Length: 596
Picture 1 (cartoon, rainbow, N blue to C red):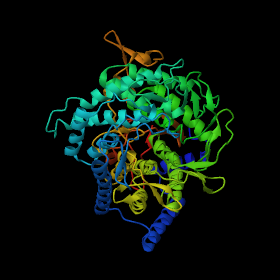
Picture 2: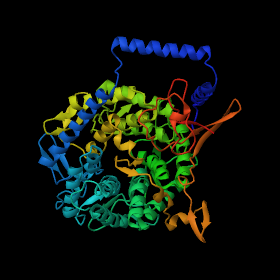
Picture 3: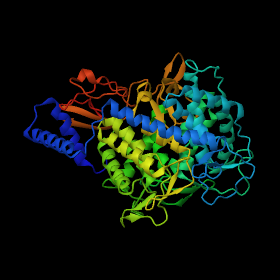
Picture 4: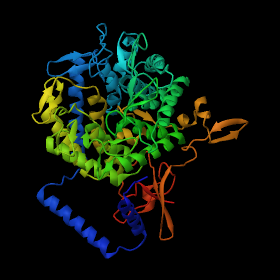
């Protein structure tokens, strides 16, 4: 599972075994060096002590950033899709998302309040229940999808469908406490309507969906049959959730059949290409990596396993992750390679790859996540923001892709790494990101994308994901109250979906096609999930001095806000394995190593 990182495993094993024996001279020397390093950083002023006051100050800065973006959208762009902050106007961009050539744009389309939909879960995270309720009521009364507009199935799924489903779940809970008017499932009704329109995209010989669909008329005549791996392999979270909320299995069945077909097309190396044909099931582009066109495919495999409890998703992810580590990884970086041979094709960093360390945290690969995250942040520090594409083999920016569209991926990974380690260095990273965004991208009318990171010339566009993801992840970095109150999986668009037993127990018929984990209760076949069985996928079991230690795929974030400890008892029980956590000799609870 961990590729060639034998040294990392040895380090982990030595660390764990040291918890139960006296410190060697090597450990004493290591601690002395760490203390000396800390003392030097304090003396040089390069280390910030993040107490409650400092964290509250940065949290409030993020809050101000969000409302500066949100208020300007509501004043100058609502109910259109997105804000143009330089001119304080709007763009109806839903039909343009992913549409690089701006083909077949609709002249009748006037927007779907995209940024409002995307902002709802962030409003809830920030604790603004009144504005959240106001947005829910407006959408329930005014939003319709019976509009003549050709949209990207992928973009519409992660932004609109995901935003509506997440907000519906939050509204269901919030309406019991603070809503002035009773919530009547308005957002779920909208989501169900949108899901019905999506189903028409899956009418292909392979079951792989078209990348483009007209919301009013379905698949258009002479529509392109080309799609991306992400486009047809990153639908399962939203459509699976919609099935569970409506009781209609067709949404999840369509998404899962497409995912299974896609997985069957992998190479003998367990690698996927980037683009394919939905009618023939043949690959068009064989070079692939962890960036654009394939990134969320990996993300949704592990997150579907967490959310729905199916071992099928874990099996896919485990094989795919191992292949990525074997063929794409080069030290802390990830290049691209031919899916058929594993040979490197393009040596480049893309900003979308910055999500990868956050994904690695979900499976407990903390050391590798930290290594890659630090490299991405070093590029951020060099330019002030993260350029869209950087050529690693030439140590230079891509000549045409020098932009930064307010992407959230680095902030996302920073949040996950801080949650896993409680290392205050990640708070320093978050502060640096906040400062950069305010210095380079904040304008009077909102936040603008950077057109060229070498000149910091701006572009007149504030993407909806800036409010859905970038601001949300930065806020949670400094105030994780929302995470402490419940366990959530965040979609690739940053929309939280709760991890619940009921979703693990619900089983549509499509799972029965390959069901191997059933037992009889009262004469009925009932699925017994990994969560209800208190099981967790094991990545590696290693014998250490007569004991066995497990590197666990601890995918549910710990609810405690402080990992400092004096005894194992204070660390509590791991949420996914139900085993006692250990307290290290340094006084911190073990996060990914648990006693077997």
